[in-house]
Structures are given as C-alpha cells and as structure tokens.
Length: 316
Image (cartoon, rainbow, N blue to C red):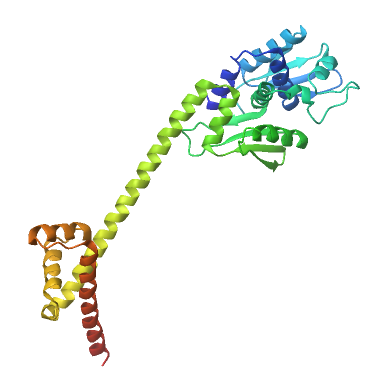
C-alpha cells in the first residue's frame, strides 16, 4: 500500500461537524467529478473513499449513491469505483457551493463553505482525497502535489494552503494545474493540517532519520577531506625535505627548521597540529601550529630555490 493511500485512509476515519462535512464534500466533488445535466459521476481506486463519500451524502441529504466497479483505463491492475449521484443532484450541488441558484457552475467557492479555520482544513482534506498524492519520505525526494483542473480553483486552493505558510506553488500542466510542495517541513505541516496524526508521526520519524543520516554523511565527508588534505600537505613537505637533502642543503637551515625536518620524517602522517603537540612534548620547547607552519614555509622556499637552480642547469 502506498503512502498516499495510507494518508487518505486515515482521513477517511476522521469524524467532523456538518459544516466540515459540507466543505470536504464540496472540495471532493468540485475536484474529482464529471457533472452532466442529470448526474454527477465520481471515480476512485480507494474503497475507503467510496465509503466516506457515501456516508457524507447519506448523512447530509438522505440520498444513496449508485456504486459500480469499472475497468481502469490507466493500465492499473486496480479496479475503479464509480459513484453516481442522480437524486436531488441540483439542490445538493447548490448546497455545496458548486452551482448557483440558476444551476450554473460557480468558478469561485462561496465564502460560507470555508468560513472558518476548521472548514478550510476540511476543504483541503476533500481536495487531497480527490486529487492529492505524496511521496513516501523514504524515497529519494520529498514531494506532495494536488492536480486541479480549473485555473480559478488552483489559485483558490493555493491561497488556502498558503494561509498556513506552506509555500505551495503552481505549475501549468497539459491537463490542468499542479500545486506542489517539495520542502519536507512544509509537507509535514500539511499532513498535520489534514489531521492525519499517525501519518505525520511516520513522516517525521523517517525525515529525522534521513536528516541525521545526511548530517553524518556530510561530517564523514568533511573528515575524509581533512584527512586527504593532511596527507597531501605532509607529502609535499616530505618532497621539499627530499629536494634539500639531495642538494646537501640541510646546513642552510636554522636549528629550528632542522628540528622540524627531523620530526616530519619521524611522523610523516601527522597533521600540523599533531606535529606541533609532539614536538612541544618531546623537546619541552612549546611550538604552535602557526609557528610550525612558518618553519615549513622556510623549508619550501629553500627547496624551491634548489628546484629553480636545477631547471636553470637543465635549460643551459
């Protein structure tokens, strides 16, 4: 079972007030139905949603839906459930704010449908039941989307989402409009708005685990990068020392620099900080990392002079 299905089935277990039921049903039919002159047709793969819509219609209007199974043309193995509303169709759609008193389609949702915070949440639940999907947080990317057919409705739903500071965005698609969120924290907040507490706990557990894992990986990468840098620096210092020794140039170094040469050869894989601590302890003469680095610069300068002399001789 997909994570989207889990979220939708949890929504279907929730109880709500009459005004919330109207808002949820209004959003579902507005965004997941075909309205003809004499009927409303809704389809879904989810049996829990069928039960939810049947219950809402029955409780609010004492009307029964005709429910049938039909083949899924989208190459899915799952059958589709088709719900058909005929009885009191016009009066129900008018009550749900989908048709006006002249039975004309209302492109904008009436204010009374989403007049309170809980009704807004219920409307968003209806939209998600009808058109929503959300990636399992275990997958590679965080993504939640709502596919809306009508432009006015897409802008309206985006506005409702952003009342909760969800940073929802819209993309124009060939078949309608996609409202989407890609920020893990915002998606989690949206699931909280839907009231799907179990789904939120699962989402947060996986998100925290992923974030911690990514943080550990970043730290490991940084540590490896530091190790690589230490090895590279030590290798270059040893090369400088080798050049000086090949040219019998150690006598040109001061006593402090000679001491550094001795300890670098003795501890070829130590960082500057570690080498400074070793020298300080073993010689009882404190030296800082900065001081040690200064002496290695003198060693490099001398080695580079020998390199230039060699290049000059080779070119003559």
